[in-house]
Length: 126
Image (tube, rainbow, N blue to C red; front, side):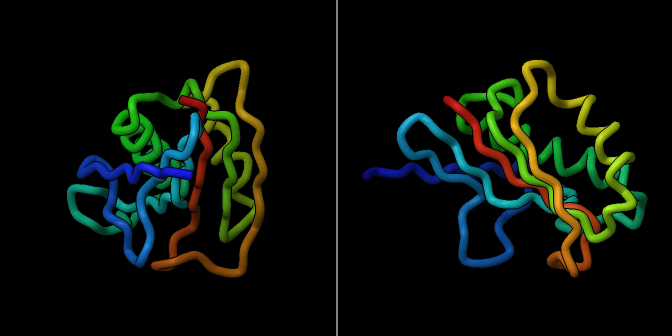
């Protein structure tokens, strides 16, 4: 099995030993995206809605670098530090994904890297 690594300066660089995304076969798998502004390398001190916009823009930039778009997402997984933010994140999510919507899971987790309040990973069909 061959795999192609995807990397773009329009999304934050990996903060560990992993790739922004990997293509294998006809699928693109992204690593979890935190609300890191790629221009500053930092998470802005704003609210979860703003953080969700940053995350989805980062996912979109990675998808674009792989030659696809959010329209071709088949599965997303959302990790939240507080499930109480689900409705706010869901409202932002609806601005980036269209019908037919990708399958999705959402979880509250004990903590996320860098103290983030949201992280999202996605699988795309190419």
